[in-house]
Structure formats: C-alpha cells, structure tokens
Length: 250
Image 1 (tube, rainbow, N blue to C red):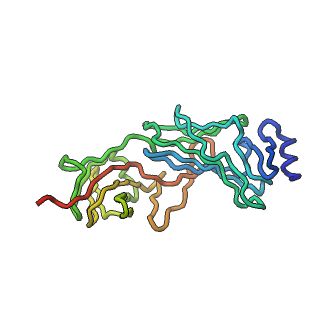
Image 2: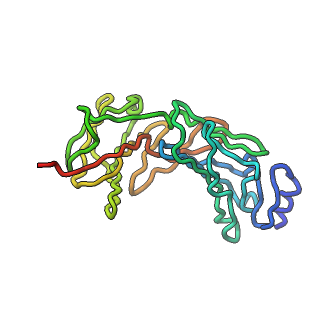
C-alpha cells in the first residue's frame, strides 16, 4: 500500500490512484519491463500489454486517456487491467482487440495515452493475400484429393517453413489437421484430409518475421524489432480460405 501511495504522489500525470489500493492507473510508457505481445491476421488483431506487477507494487490499469488503433481504425479495450490475487502475481493485463482489421500493404499499431505514444510497425502482416485452385475452380474437394493452389504474393513462400492446416468446423468434429504440402514457386500442392468436412485452410508462414505454431505445442512469441516499442509477435494465419471436403457425386 505504501509503494502505491508513493507512485501516486510522485507521478500525478501518468499514474493515478484508484479506490482499490491493489491497482493503480499507469501511463503505458511508464510500465516497468513493458512488453507488447500482439497477433495480427486478416481475421483479427489482438494485443496484450505485459509488465512486471512486482516492480510496480500493484496491478496496472490503463489511463482513461488510453486508446489504440490499427491505422485509422480504433481497437476495442477488452480489459483495462485488474487485480486478482494477493502478491500481484496474477494481475489481469490490459488486452485489446480488433476484428476484421483493414487490409493494407503496410500497417501500424499505435498505443497512446497522456504519458506518450508507442508505435509498432506491422509491416505486411495485414496485406491482402489469395490462393486459387489450379486449374481454376471452386474450393470444394474430395477426401484425400491432391490439390494445387496458386498463392499470392509468392514472396511469402520464400521462407524456411510453410504450414497449411485444415481447421474443420463441422459441428461435433472440430479438429485441426496439418496437411502434407510441397512448394514450387507460387504453387502449393497439398493432400486433403481423408474425411468430409467444412472448414478453413489456414496458411502459416515461418522465417522472419513469422513462426508457425504447432497444434500440440504452439511456438513461443518471437522478437519484433520494429517501431519504438519492445514487442513480440504471436504467429497467426496470413490467409484463411473457406473450403468444403465432400464425397464425389457418382
């Protein structure tokens, strides 16, 4: 309690007391050992603002002036921060979200409050991407079918590892299957799962700056040395393509 009181008296602009002495409003640029953990895909952008509660002596809450955006689109503050257990060992960290972010060749994540501004260069994580069957046709395949897709931009595939997963969202069958693939230039050839289903092909690309997660053991976040905020990137699919796997009509 004493440590919180000192913080409140010492930095009235960027740190403010709350009615709960176990939490304190703190400017984002003043969080101790701050780390911005983010994920970005065409489906959503999510941000967790990590810090060291023990060094702060309390759980951090975002200032009332805080706001965040991807480009010109405001993010939703899902969690402003909260105290949960004695000892500040399990504070709920601030969390932000944006569904269906604007697609652009280059994007910037901005976090701002009365204490200052942090920016993170998302580079081309939200750039438009596409995959088309070769020869052209619908995204309806048969169990075990070998399928070739033309992927764009082909520069995405100049990395060490590419993973294509089939995420089956058929009610009662929700599963994730990593498909065997081969790559030749802009073409990705893969073998569909051996069962029928409706779901999504998710394309995860490894190498800098993306590391693909494994369904059983997700890859750890990786350093993201861009912009003026210490950040880590949590891998997310760069392209989500709805597909159907159905039995062939006799």
